[in-house]
Length: 264
Image 1: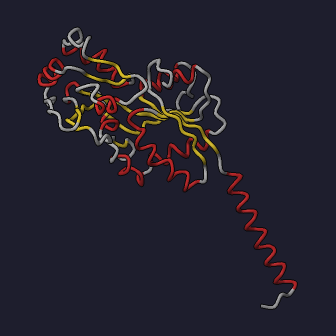
Image 2: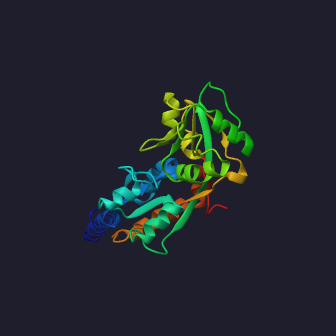
């Protein structure tokens, strides 16, 4: 190739353009802090690396319970002054954070629907929870029961157990699990029966999933995203929300045991 002044100028311009575009991409890449909880966690862990790959953004992730006073629960971490850009938790928990002024009003976006299920340690008898009466008898017969300190456990202990008339009988056998997944407790043999969001039980190979609560006493919980007050990366957070809502990732989300809202 002959290097004429015009050719050299053209090559220099192309090199300069490439450097400019690369620098622009780096400049546009952002770093966002996200905290998520419960039923959406498995889907989140699968999807975030793909989002980072597609956009160049970096996501710093934290995890905690939607409600409660555990040291790692989301409300506790906000009360300690920890900073985040995006929060994903149960709809009730998110609404509480909005009322406290932690989350921007009107920014809520429902991502998935989740239901409560039960599991036992693999190889042990599988009790019947297919009807309300069967569920009641299973609860009364269980030597030990573990339930989450988050949204599902709050529903069980404050609404379902009293509704079934078994709250008093379960005082010594049912235990709220703090800062740990119920599945881990059951897998160790520290509880005979465990209740939590389906998506938080099905990934334990040491467990046998026995089913969801009967429809008449089931609680369907939405896990929703909200923009945190004071965040300087709201546009990037909105990008991540749209990614979670996209039809392309719906099947991945379903495989984790929850139902995408936007895909319906």
